[in-house]
Image 1 (cartoon, helix red, strand yellow):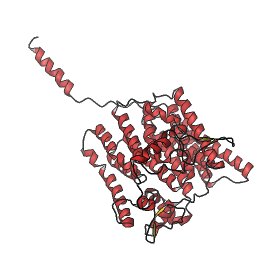
Image 2: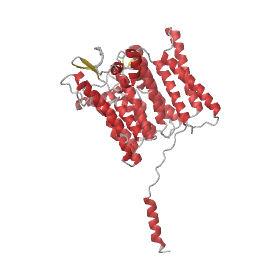
Image 3: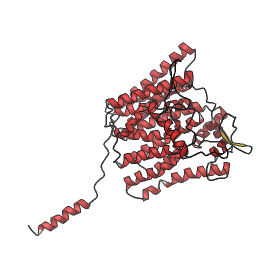
Image 4: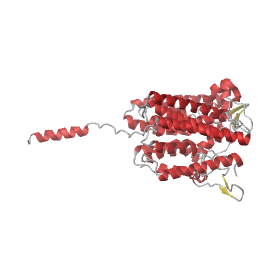
Length: 468
């Protein structure tokens, strides 16, 4: 018995040294056929109400984008019905159900944006002009005076990152300068919300909580306003949000390094600030894999994005870096500086709408409106424990994404809300999902409801009355 005791101690110690299996993340509540059908049906209701309002008050027919959303919704209802008949036992284990629910979210928000926006093309269509230039084999654009651009000799160059224009190339090849950038923005915005739904499925949330957070992202933030605005700055942000959500979905889902690297690189080509978050994705992927080898597969995406960035800058400015904003601002302008921090913090945290005796009495300011006075539910991003590595890393990613704008010489006007910080919203949404304990509690629902009311009021006011 005594002789066996040392051997027993060695066995216990060896067992403790063996690697333990990774803790599995609790699964989200799976969607159902009934949920997908409900989403498609709500989309149809929105389209029908929009059609009735247009006919009754404006003597106008529904926009083609609303009709397209209706076609998607009808197709989804038919498919869901056939699937339900074919497999009465269909459950959340069926991957097709989550894809069907995602399509339902897309159809619903495409209908919603088409009903609350206008398909009148934005005059600020720099991305269409850039896509048209790419189709014709050059980088300079035809830029009217109202389009912000960098003038280099006889050539005009747009100021925005290139990815939205690259995505528009097939459409510009068919319709030329007739491409409707606003309609493209609405499609991208609806896809953003669908991607938010998909990404939230990576967290242990009930369907109820997942729906609340998805609706918040699409209707309780200025994603709604920027999507239906469709200007050059707005489309850049809407596209950046989509690729960031896809990258976060990959990060918290399968985590395939090659695909993750591509998505992170493409997001940076829509908003350059997002390139600064590359190391955080690498850190979280390393923490998951515990190996450097898979991280090398992320490099092709980074290299591809960097190559496109450098190639375009060399072609336009004979420089490794984008000089457009510096040329536009003029010599002697200090674009970044500590002195701009107080003003940008004031915009982000404290800037309120103005009040006066003119109906409707509360007026969004031309200079912007604080984040918590447009989307107060973002305060729920402070709920998760930042002692957890994942929560701390995502919080740092949000701050890093916001960082350059905090030191920038302009706060983003003209704007409703704080458009310079839109690309950080996906990270804040992740923190909100981490802070929800499966179900959306009463405080979560109240804050999201208040956010939707504030955003709806702003969209309505700016569309009917403009800014103060």
